[in-house]
Length: 79
Image (tube, rainbow, N blue to C red; front, side, top):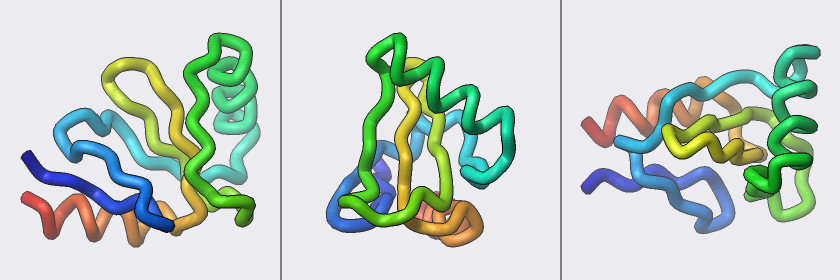
């Protein structure tokens, strides 16, 4: 089982990740709000600015303060 560090010792199983996106786009802000209303939002930023959004196969939306490109590199290294 490969584990990805989302920053500040917050971890997720790599096989469960569906997508990693930048947090700034308007559709991602809507996704964040929908996840909050459905109680499927996980804030892993430790109070920092949200730089990327990770969506899992269970429908959970995870906010990370690590850049999306950095997370993708970590996922590639874990393969």
